Length: 98
Image (tube, rainbow, N blue to C red):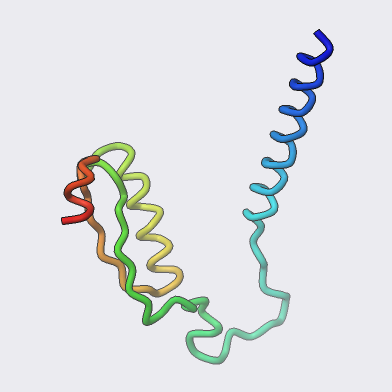
């Protein structure tokens, strides 16, 4: 019984650590008040301009999961400026490597 309590405490501690890491990775740096955005791409946040990415949203085009992932990736593309090629692979690994 004592080992079961120790394992559940360890699991709870592990979950707490993972959640704190996830939350800390989700922070957003807000611009300071009065800061100007002059300076071209550096001010607009397009730090990924000139980068080519192949992205696999997963599933078929228009599928519920793939659609949500695609919409998030499209927004990141607009915000950060890379050139992205989207490949919907219908969960078929052969389409990913072909």
